[in-house]
Length: 400
Image (cartoon, rainbow, N blue to C red; front, side, top):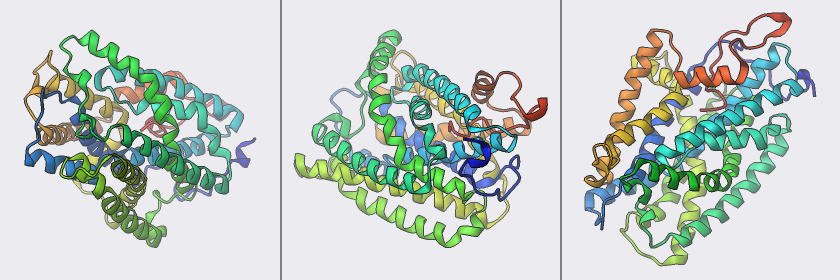
């Protein structure tokens, strides 16, 4: 399949020109993922949740859990189209693009394997798995994308129905990872490596519903030119976020232990929570695009976009901070705080990331993880037509 056969819409902006909404989405996405991951490093023995902690879990389940991942996955699919479009604009054809994506996938899988030792739950490996298994979706029709999205959403509901039934009475409802309490770093890492393959396989296909929506949206450059799609974005934001809040409330009440309806109702609530979370993630990205369309970015938006441009670096940075703050062989805060404390630590980590990313932007320095991934994927100089060198690109696109 040649470059001209790729299902890509005409560009709304020059291929090398950055637009605000995708980067802004990635930057805010890192706040959501920090809030989603922080509680996984708690390991309080015989934990009894306080009302404040229950309220923190309730809000987390309504606004973050199963809502942050779809944001990641949508922007992942969107970024893959941006990357493919950029390569195609330089004369690359699909038979040449596909091996580059696979090489990127293998390296992301390895990055995620190392990262899993720190936090236990990793999305980078899932990206790598998706690139290796599902990159062919980039050259499928819109109709095929919608079929994949529909069927995998049904599969997602069935998966979470089974998962919620098995965890209805466990500490996992509140959000514990018991391996986080290990006092031996090597032992903790080995436990987490043991579950790494299961996480990649069990969750790798869950990329598909939001990823296919991201591919569809990127073909129309909806985030690059939000002003051209305002009615769609407004409807998507209003409906998606409303569905996420209403559909997520029953499971949020169960997870925070405010109600105990029994195993079967809890399982149903968990499945509904996951599916409406997909709608919420898509709605959140639409809302961010609307914000990006309103006016030129100020200092805060510029810093958030700078963070989004370095999302791979600061995704891993979050885990390093959590290990330094919460682990029993460091400061041990994970045994002395609850869910509200974890959430506050997540926000503080994001603000620190924001400041560091803005400092990097001012010095025109890419994130180290982005630099490394780019060199491993393309070599020291990216290929370009006619023996030239390629212009700078965002190496986190398709991996953020």
